Image (cartoon, rainbow, N blue to C red; front, side, top):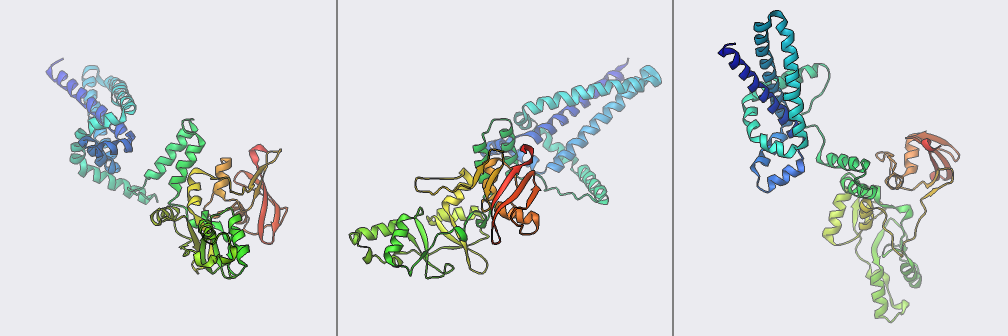
Length: 422
């Protein structure tokens, strides 16, 4: 064995080291915590900034690493084959294949990737300054490879989008769901985090109190009757109208009424409720819950009326309605508790048709879709493609649903039985 043999062996060792470097870098940079790296970058870490830059163009990063890794492996295998052929003749090809497969799998794949996956953040910070110039050098070749791949996938009808992938919002949601499945996050915390993430996707029309359940006051009623209704109401703010519920003239606050009563020493005949009403605030039904929450906080108010595109009142939305989407139902000593769900002895549930699907999902840990309908009755109508009669029964989304009660065109009560429990 001459000098050339040892030089070739040393080159193979260097190539295997480069292969291990590329393999570990790929695993670390794709598994590193984006949140932790972002925080380190904000703290002034230059290495973290490099990691962020590399991961921002993930397709180019992966392409360059794979190209470098394969070049190192192929060249190392070719050199090893030449050595083994020189030593063992034609059988050297078999020996070289066995030796290089073992070396690549153990030292260039499993070992570095295991190391990187156990310390992805630390590993990525260490290799980022070294991998950046490699990506720059291989950029032309990587671009050609990416173009060829996209062209071939395009001929097969596969659309590629470099910007496509999990958004930060989806990544957080999936992480929380995984931690819940593993028992590290309780259901209540998962629901709250999910509620926060859903705010931007929810419209106020999906969480408002519908006009059919909205309590309003007729300003033409006797003063005593109006004041008694205000003081006996479970709500602190009530819309007032002049005979037509669609024409709201103002919002009366029970605290303002109490102040007026104190001023006149409790003489109800001297209190003109219409003079202490506040200007109503109207918002479009397509307003996002997140935008409305910001508006409530900015304007320091808790109550607004929801209108459709024609300006007709569809319901009311309050700060409490939005907060309940995050923390769940908020009840106090003045709330009237509405029984929306009743569990029967046979495992079925009697459910009010007006119950929002989101509340049903949260209460029973179901996963009914709420894209096409807001209430459970609306979902049944959407799935049935008609307004079903009382007594009709349907099966969808793993549930058997029977129409128990119907009033005019409204499904007021349903019996829902999970099929797995039936």
